[in-house]
Length: 329
Ligand SMILES: Nc1nc2c(ncn2[C@@H]2O[C@H](COP(=O)(O)OP(=O)(O)OP(=O)(O)O)[C@@H](O)[C@H]2O)c(=O)[nH]1
Picture 1: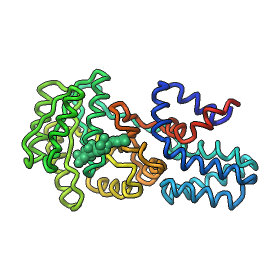
Picture 2 (picture 1 turned 135 degrees about the vertical axis):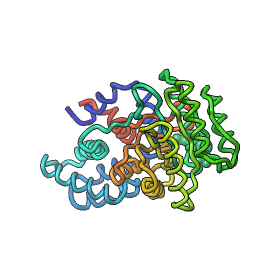
Picture 3 (picture 1 turned 30 degrees about the vertical axis):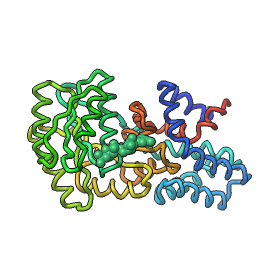
Picture 4 (picture 1 turned 90 degrees about the horizontal axis):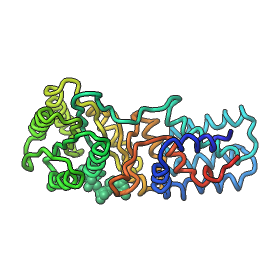
């Protein structure tokens, strides 16, 4: 069975609406990256060095990241030799196959949130201002709520003017309460209050917003450490997740941010927003391969249900939807 057919079967286990979201959300990347690949395949009849060189350029332009591209090209060359592939069209399926493999790293990644089977789960959400942190918290709260979990939000960004109100707007929209103090107060004190409130109300998940100041790494580390310390003290084993929100439209800059935050705290998952707003959706692979942190959610639009759990097969489907849909062999 062809790889595309297998892929189609695999994604058909999930709702069609999920595939549609990935297809729509990755439209920009598909129409630049994937069309360039299609064009390349059409121009070259034989798989030779020039073909790989051009493919390398296309991948780098899609923000896949230089070292990931090198690895991918090497693997493609080996595979092409092994399977004795001459026709460039066949390479397209191998490229897709390798993209899924690179993401999954040989085994399927656990992209779901680490929610405790019983008792309170605390999720700390970090990231610089403007990346879509508040929006993502609102969307995750809504998703958990829809799954029947009780959720509480902690307004830990006491630094940015308007951040508390913005979180409250989301809280109202999705029917979730927000624990807050006044602007400028100590974020660790807000966290203390929030953990107490979550415990006494038997809440399932506490989602904590944090300030996203990055000008000074030492301050960022200190603040995150303090917030984490309070959470850990009030609930041993917590936080159960530290989600880093990155804006896909910032490209390689997002990678730099990820490195800084990883140095400051133990990031357990990435929320990659605004994937729909970039033609360089290859950044997903760079993040996965260069940082080895799973992308747990991707933002595929502004609507509340546009934040989707990341899935490598759905992602590759989004990249090559036309080919996958039209491949009936
Ligand atoms: N197209 C698109 N827009 C998004 C996505 N996620 C967030 N946005 C938009 O990005 C903008 C910024 O999001 P906010 O949530 O306000 O940013 P923020 O990170 O909370 O800002 P801080 O609170 O300063 O950290 C908003 O207009 C969101 O609607 C996404 O996945 N796709």
